[in-house]
Image 1 (tube, rainbow, N blue to C red):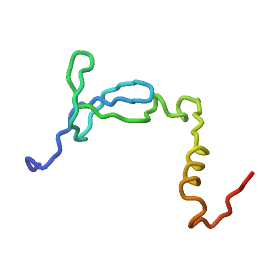
Image 2 (cartoon, helix red, strand yellow):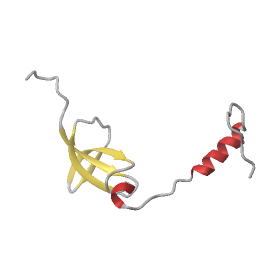
Image 3 (cartoon, rainbow, N blue to C red):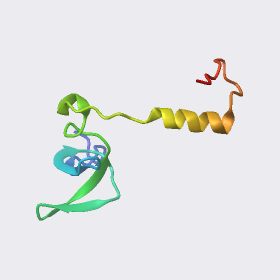
Image 4 (tube, rainbow, N blue to C red):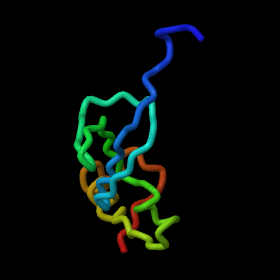
Length: 89
């Protein structure tokens, strides 16, 4: 194998922010943050969803409030450029 062309393959700490779940796996991902876990310091990667929090694996579905965002968008921009009529009821 050629030397100095392969990325650094090491243990990395992944932190699922939605449920405060942490796990260690090996990865080549580059990070700027570090965190201590079980007495050892690891490079840290913060994630929003993992198998611990994903609805497919947990069986719990979250309802996302998209209606509020749509209404906020319509208030800001109205129907300018819209190809569909804005319902009033």
